[in-house]
Length: 455
Ligand code: SF4
Image (cartoon, rainbow, N blue to C red; front, side, top):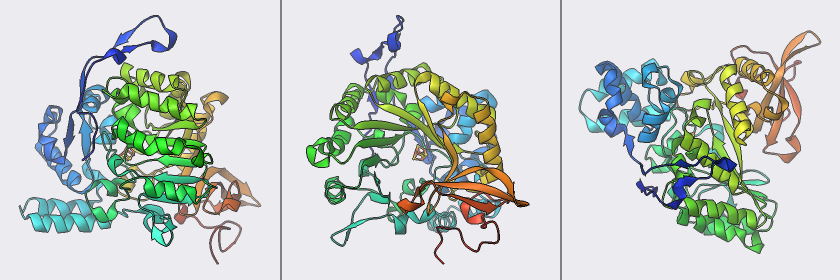
């Protein structure tokens, strides 16, 4: 079970300096209360839905992970605008998130009261949802002395991903999460480390690694003392080659109290300062999907406090139908981030897993939204790369659509590659209005293979 603070006690850290403003803001005691699929019936706001809608939610929540906390329910969702509200769509299961035949399969068994049949059906349906996209179970797990290194992925030469075992949940779950398989309790699908000893051994043997990304789940569900146990050893001279420590997190959205009123919030900020003081860069890779996540005062205070430590916040998130497939939403998100001192970093294409059919946007539309949003902001906010697909060979960015020698093509670029020689290489694919992922694309100009494909 995760170790996040259940009750955050008010202390001296609740007085915010407001980044130089004279005004001070006080944040009161916050209780972390979370609802899972079993407690769907205890969320009073859902009473405004019909019985059928609530049943649909339970059916979908039996397959895809569901977890939402009271802060999200009370502060982020506009209950006068459900089901369309983007944060409601971001966190609550919708019937259409399962394809009709899969929904029917589960719904039929759900009503039978046969636990074993239900479990079998759920397992079958989960398998049909491509639980590990981009071959991450088979291809990115490194070995050391012929042994698998637990909880580590190494795909790109300079960056190692680390999945601490106590960071494999989130303060709430996103309905589109590409890591959903890690949350559904099947141990075979988990990627997690029991402790960091193997990570350290691996880093010692790999001086080419400059970046360690601590990820999950959300590593900031951990108490600071546990996170410290992972990070502190990396500050010693033997790991001087590790220049940047990144922490992937959605806590700034789902539980900003983590940086403001949690009992170990001040210690967390101190840890960020210590990483910086050791001469390394600490980057909080913040996951945002909508500018609404940045509106609550406590969310803004959390950003101010993180920035005051010297850490940088880089923002990333996927483009999603039903949540943010709108240029105006992205332009406002990026503009707001810039005003708050957050660096827009990535617009991702939704991955080919889970409820993908519900959220997917054709690549051409994704690029149009990206271009339109870019045109609405100044150069300062144009630091977000994308739309980018984290695919098996690497991160592929759609640069645009054009015509070359009479052939309409996608212009693409490999911004990160399994093979370092591929990085920044442009390439072309035949224009395809329906394509939603790299594997739907064909090489342009009569070529048989893309340059990264084995012949
Ligand atoms: S916060 Fe990140 S890891 Fe957690 S559910 Fe959302 S997308 Fe997935």
